[in-house]
Image 1 (cartoon, rainbow, N blue to C red):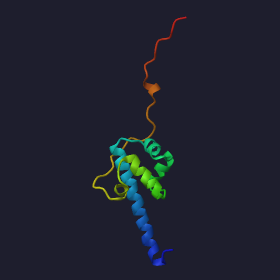
Image 2: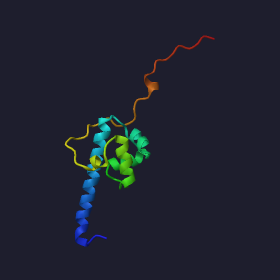
Image 3: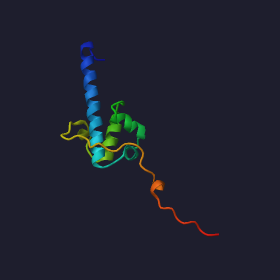
Image 4: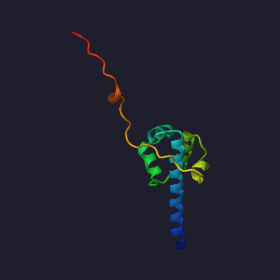
Length: 110
């Protein structure tokens, strides 16, 4: 257990590391044009868990950190190290269904 005078600093450091991990996940995922769903699938995680990590709302176990790094093709240290670049904003939301843009085929005559 932390000493009382250390608790505030520990909380601030935990938030800073979560924010850095969140930013780096978005950065590396964006470079690969990878959705959260694809990243989650490759890492063996649920999409909502990846979303929580990217929002800084989840504690990340070491095993999860390793799985995310492997899925992105980077080292675990790269996910925790401050990068020189910012994530590229990706379009959010559901992708337009193929059925919406598909050409309708003529009906067969009876």
